[in-house]
Structures are given as C-alpha cells and as structure tokens.
Amino acid sequence: MGIVAGLDSSPDFTRIVVCDTDTGAVLRQGYAPHPLDGDRPADVDPQAWLLSLGEAAGGGLLEGVQAIGVSAQQNAVIALDAQGNTVRPAMVGGDRRTQVAAADLIDALGGREAWAQAVGSVPQAAQPVTKLRWLAKNEPDAALRAAILMQAHDWLVWQLLGRPVRRTTDRGGASGTGYWSAATGSYRTDLVDLALGHQVMLPEVIGPAEAAGTTPEGLLISAGTGETMAAAFGLGIGLGDAVVSLGASGSVMAVHPEALVDGTGMITALADATGMHLPVVTTLNAVRTLRGTAELLGLSDLESLSDLAMKSTPGSHGLVLLPYLEGERTPSLPHTAGTLAGLRRESMKAEHLARAAFEGMLCGLADALDVLRGRGVDVRRIFLLGAAAELPAVQAAAPALFGVQVVVPQPADYAAIGAARQAAWALGVSQGALDPRNPPAWQGAAAQVLEPGEELAVGQAVRQQYVSVREQTHPGAFRA
Image (cartoon, rainbow, N blue to C red; front, side):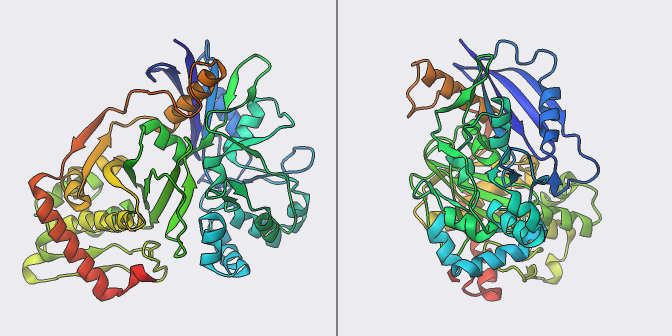
C-alpha cells in the first residue's frame, strides 16, 4: 500500500485529500480558504493559492505521502515575464469585462465555425485566449512583457517542483485555453499571436500518467489538470456516463472517444484526464431559475420551494417554464427572456409554478443532453451533482425527464480525489506497477441510484410539452 495526496485549488479554497493508492480510500483531509478580501475578484495574486495550500497541508497532513496530484480552477491565466515573475495578477473566473474581446476574436478568425474547426470551442468571456485579447487591448505594457503563459494548476505544479526550466500542463487543462486543439493534440500558437499580439512560451503538454517531475525531497508530482477533468476522474465516469452539474448555471459533460467539432459553439470539445474526450454543453439557467422562483413566491430557501413543488403533479397542471432568465447559451439566445406558458385559472397556484421551475430547469438540461446525443455521444447513466441534486423535487423529476438512470453521489471532494487518483497512476507507472494506458481501479463513489421506472412515459410527455412551447416561442433555435 502507498499513500498519495490530491489537492484542489478552487476559486475560494484549497482542499487536500490523502488516499490509499490501492483502493482510493480517503485517509486524511485538509482545508483552508484563500486569503482574499471581499467578493471574489477577477484579478488574484497567485501567491494566495500557495498560502492557502500551505495552511491546508499543515499539521503533518502530508506525512508519508509519495506523490501529489494537483487540480485547480480552470480559465485562470498567469502571465510571466522571461524571468518567471508575474507581470500582473492572475486573471481568473468568468470575467465579464472580456465579453467584447470574445466577440472580437470570433470575427478576427472568420466566425464561430472557424474557431470550432481550429480548437473545438468558440471564444467565451472566461477562456484564457479571450483574456489575452483583453490584456493586449487594455494593458498593452503588461501584454508586451508577457513571455510565458500558465494556468492555475500548471503554476502550482511548477511552484511545488521548485520552478524548474521545464514547464508542463496536461491535455485536459490545455483543451480549455482556446489555443490548444483536443482533436489534433497540439497548440495553435497563431491564435495566441492573434489574441496577445506576439508569441510566448507555452507549457509542454504531457500524458495523463506522466509525472511532471520530482521534488528535491523525492516527492513525485503528477501532471495535474483542471477541476472539471479532475472531478470526472474522481467520480470514475466512463463511456456511457454523463455528468449534469447544477450550479447557478448548468453543465452537461460526457466521456467520448473522440473530439467533437460543433460550429454552433454549443459544444466545447475538452479533453479529459485519462486520454479520452469530455465534450461539454453549458446552460446559463439552472439553480438561478429555482432561486428566482423562490423569491417570487416569497420563500426563503430551495428546500421550501422543493416541498411546495412536491404538492403539485408531473406536468405542473399545464404550466411550462422556459427558464431563459439570463438569456441562454443552449440554445444560443443571448438576448431572450424566460417564458411562462399554459396559464389557466386552475393552474395559477404556487405549487404548480414551483413544480414548473424544477421541470423547466431539468428540461433545459435535457436539451443540452440531446445536443450531445445528437452528435453520437452515448448516454446511459447520468451523475447528478450540486447541492440542488439532493432536493426531493429534483430527484422526483430527473430520471423520467432525462430518460435514463440517475446517480446522485454522496458529497465529497471529487476534484481532489481525482487529483489523488492521477498521482497514484503516475506513481504506479514510475514504479512499473501500473500500465500508463489504464488508471488505478479505485472504488466508485457512494451514491443514491434513481431509475426512471413507470414514471418514464409521464416524464417524456412533460418533456414534449416543454419542447412544443420552446419551438413555438423560439422556432429552429437548435438548428441555428
């Protein structure tokens, strides 16, 4: 038996899990918030991540650990000068100030289809390539001094290794930059030039089971990856599995053997942490739909909204809510608004509106699933993540609306667990005990399993009514 650690540096905190290399059992855990002032900022000194890491690892947490894997927030960009010093704070998160830069880049390359063909995604405000464009336009001096580009997990791995000359990343993290193609497995350096105005040094993309290096103390550091890829690896999803994540916005991702090219921009072609691919479709309106409905009905929390919704019946007594409250990305309707259809005197009750909010949110995510299915992605089982996945109204409706088995894993630090699993893989390969093509077979996540059952026909009728209203109000939205 060996011991490895996985650390997840999210936008708000660092979590560390120490795991058994053979089973994946979590032996110890550590946690520390990031030392940030006020609301989550768009610019962050990356040293804050190291301070949080050191605090989370305190008290001998890493004693006996042989290897570390690193997961970190995606879309962060750290621009370094030729000496390896930051030229400005890291640009992180979904940065609204870069929206114009995204539109500029789309036009500069010749449209959405050109970007999809080049790198498997269309520039969005959060992506590193878009932030580079913003930097060149708004902080030209900093842009000119930028000689090296890294993402959060790249930078943390580099720091753990003592800032070596060799800088690495993994294909999962690279695939989210907007200048690396999951289909070809190579950088598009011309797109960096298009965005930033000049060429820079980019990290070497290493394989899923490769080590980034070894510390002077002999601690192996694996390749690292982005939070999305690490969480998928920690959950243990494979071909036939999809993950539906319920945050303020929603996302659907699935394991697929090849990269997908989607000229509409609805699919982002990411690579995963194992050598496969991870196409992702995002909706703008998930839990924010529930929170908005709860506020409208004078309810203080989502649990109360769920309890109210359970007093209604499937189909919400004829009410259909298209939850496009912030516009929508899937389908691409950035300037639209939500729609409430089916109002009759008998349906104008609070419980029916509450139920319609849950059904509308889930039907919107079922639309996103259908985007993947329409491109040949096999979906036979869905992992449902997020705090809202525990709500009875979600669990009552999701299996029938999605049409497949739904798995609700117990809450755990899946990104950190995925990072630890990657560390165990790299350690096993370095010792000749594991095949670089096959990761360690860790125990699956403990979970609640929900089957569509006899409610399937009712659920599909509810979904069809939703699609009918969507087509009436936004005809051909998915054919754009």
